[in-house]
Length: 107
Image 1 (cartoon, rainbow, N blue to C red):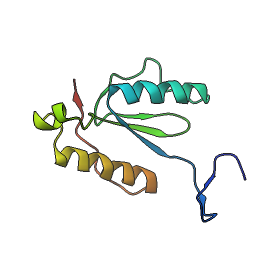
Image 2 (cartoon, helix red, strand yellow):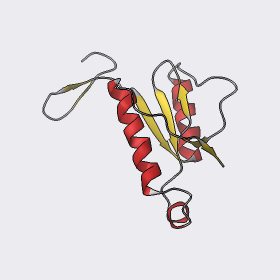
Image 3 (tube, rainbow, N blue to C red):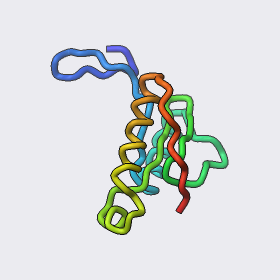
């Protein structure tokens, strides 16, 4: 098996990861550490976390989203529409279609 490909249980060959959705600041920090360890660090200085932030590295696009916790959803900080927009954008980035950019919000 070539490096950068994954096979599922059916032997289906998958392409490498193109988009990473980071659900919250903690995930964004973890993704930044992993990409740096893989030799594809995020830009320096690293952009501040915010909902809708897109950060490009040599390996993937990191798309940030507020964490879907009860606190964020019950208070309206993260709505169902906002979450849908993130995953529609992620799909668009992954398949190369012209998906609409997400309106960025900072903490």
